[in-house]
Length: 372
Image (cartoon, rainbow, N blue to C red; front, side, top):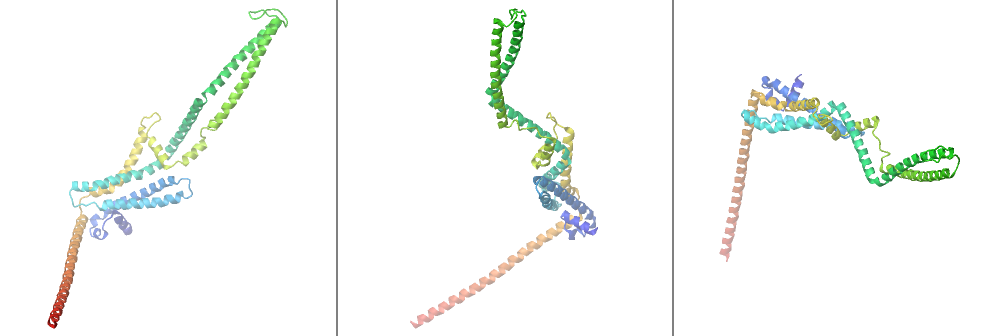
């Protein structure tokens, strides 16, 4: 139990030797340290989960996810530990809030970064369904675009093909009508279109000639239509219309499995909206609640430090810091004094050497003058 307590003290960024002197402060810093530790743990899990999708499908995805999760969790742990330990309780409440405001903003940003990958895991099923719907809609749009481009590009050929079809249908009806009239003429059935003379006479031969012309024309039109249909089918193959199909359920599952972090993050954002663009309030509130929960959890150590009254540990820590500053100032004065003494000593030596040199030069000049 003692080791756990000291570990959480370390996590809180407290000065352990000073904190041990004040038992009344022990539980407070155990709570702050535990909050920082579990925040870093959540950060490690969320960072590893996000990195897993960055390398999803790779053979080293799990290894990279574990490594990045440990690094990310350690980084968040150090930042939280610094944020909490750097709040000074000596100033007024407004001064403390002003001092902590940049740290609170940083904590909010960290909370948002931590919460997003965890939200991706919580709403994994809904995200997969949203991705599948998006892939299906994208495939529909792609097919519609290809068909529109195909229709615009081959509008002339398709128009001719439609004309051939219309003419073929018209000729088929005329041939059936003419063949019926020919039978009436041969069997002597009187009507507006037949003579009523039985046998294969002049009128029957005329109708047979007309029928033959229409059948020849139908044959030609049918050949042209077949050639045009074959040409358009080849163009469809070339443009990719015949090969493009909607995704199967197995393909949709595979696409959802290999979806990257950006696609899943987009799908998570779309969960807050219905298909008609209106707000899906239930999902939106659930996402918002989870996000703010982690943001609050990340800011909690800072808020606890701000809300807690100044205790004996804070006073002792301030006195220790003041004593250290006083010692540093005195240490500086000592170094300055030592430097001055050393400088003065070197200065005296330099002056003595210069005097000795000048005296020696003067004696030399005096002896030389006497010699002259």
